[in-house]
Length: 177
Picture 1 (cartoon, one colour):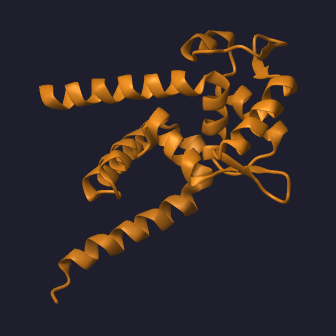
Picture 2 (cartoon, rainbow, N blue to C red; picture 1 turned 45 degrees about the horizontal axis):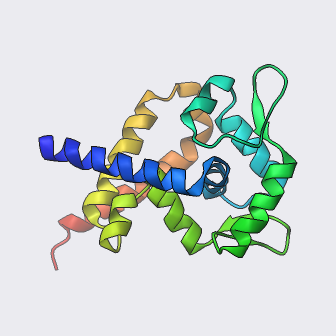
């Protein structure tokens, strides 16, 4: 147990160092694009949605270039986002698609994983391992158990599809060659 706690602490510190290396706005953009391709306005909206209050600002290093407006909500300004998008495109973290939306490159996904830890441990060791994927799935399952029914109900079909896939995987273990 102590070994696992030490591993988690080390992992946390590596992620914080990576986040500081990438800076606040760059890290936020990586986070927003991890959800899928977005244009500049959608990126600003996603960042505002993720960090809708002034209090959450202190959790992010390097919050320069943020525009505080309205009822305590904030969003990055276009004058900081678009130059950063250009810089991130040049450095190969993101790609600008023909439709004007930005998406993460493999380098961007790797940076995201180093900072935010989604499958981060498996990237350091090579391809995904069954243990790491199952650990992540267990965490997500626990999260879904805590989500209110009203938020899950619109996603019942997707949950059923995932459950069906997992049942097939489980059943494949019972089949004898």
